[in-house]
Every structure is written in structure tokens, then in C-alpha cells.
Picture 1 (cartoon, rainbow, N blue to C red):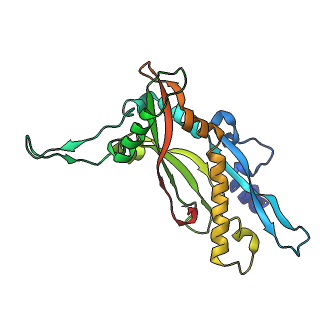
Picture 2 (cartoon, rainbow, N blue to C red; picture 1 turned 90 degrees about the vertical axis):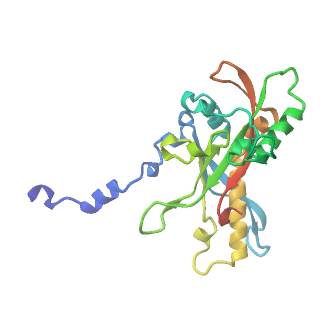
Picture 3 (cartoon, rainbow, N blue to C red; picture 1 turned 45 degrees about the vertical axis):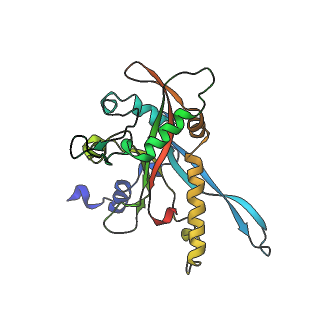
Length: 261
């Protein structure tokens, strides 16, 4: 038809396939502090051979990591009226006896009844409180996950998201996608070295070193001073039951695959 004969279909394909994040001058929602996402540059100390023009160790920009504040995620969780109903502020032990007066057997099924959670809670209660503070102290159990996610059925486009579950919530709720209990905290930058070497790359030991340094640098950004202060001194939050409590984040599990080792 005449109305489409002279259409530049190549340009149409590029427009339809364009990602909003390709527009460099437009501030994106996930980079907006109001939306909770930040874009932070990643820098590494790169060693250069003594025969190169630039010698020694130089700090270089190697990419950017998109991330959220873990402390802000904790605050959002404890302010969520729907999730708060099943959020356990304190752990407890669970046991079973086959008959009255018989021996008891420990039952392990939930994170908040696990020895690790109970030990973290006891250690917190036995530690000195903050000066002048007599608020109840609670452990916020963090369960961190990360894995590569392919975006297409064909090709190599992928993301490497990281997200948090709270071990204060039941596994039966966490495993339901409809519960929406996963909290995205980061999208990792990957393959820095392999994208730059070209051709026949270095050995596996070198690539493993580059991947390790890359991930450590990004976790250093995510586990920022705000998180470290909360880890040591806690976060005072007024809960939905009207009581103020001091919450201490503790990383109880980190599930990841090989490249993050």
C-alpha cells in the first residue's frame, strides 16, 4: 500500500527495540532516589606491566552497579501492614514428643526456628545495649540470592539480579510467587574481563580473579556505611503494633552459583 511503501522499517525496528535506559540524558526511574534505585560506578585497582606506558597499579572505572539500600528495604518491609502479620520478631525452638513423658526431638523446618537464628538472637540479647536505650532488640534475618537470568530464548543477553528474602517469614509464604516477598537489591555487572580481552582470552585462573574482584567491589558498594552502622547499632523502627524496636540485620544465608566465589 502507498501509506507504507516508503516506510523505513529498519528505523522502526530500532525504535521498537530501543530500551529506555539507552537514552543517556533521561533520568530513569530505577536511578531515581525516590524509587530507591541508585547507579554507582565500580572501580578496581588494575596492575599494569612495568614495560607499559602506564606502570604500576591504577584505579580504573570498570562499570556501574544498579542497587538499592538494604536498610531502606528493611524499613519498607517492617512498614508493610500485609507482610507484618506473619513477620516473626523473635525466634523460637520447636520440638516433638511421640508420647507424653517421652523424649523430645527437635523439629527443623523454618529459618526462625533454626539453631543459627536462635544463636544470633541470643548473642544479640547478651551483648551490651546501646547507651540509654532499653528498646526490645530483634534480629532481621536476611537471605540473599543471586543468579544469572537469560532475557531471550536466543542469544546471550542476560541480567544478574540479586534479591533478599527475610528469614523472619515462613518458607511456605516465601515460596509462593503470589506473596511477592522477594526484594530486588541489585543488578550485578558481569564479564568485565572477557568483554575487553578479545580473541583468545587469558587462563581460567585470571578470569576467576577478575570475576572475584568485580563481585567484591560491588558488594562493598551494596554493604555500605549505612548497612554497617545498622549491623552494629541497629535501626529504631516504630512497628505496626505501636511498639518501637531496635532491629539488627544479620545475613543468615547467601545462595549463589560458582562465578561469585
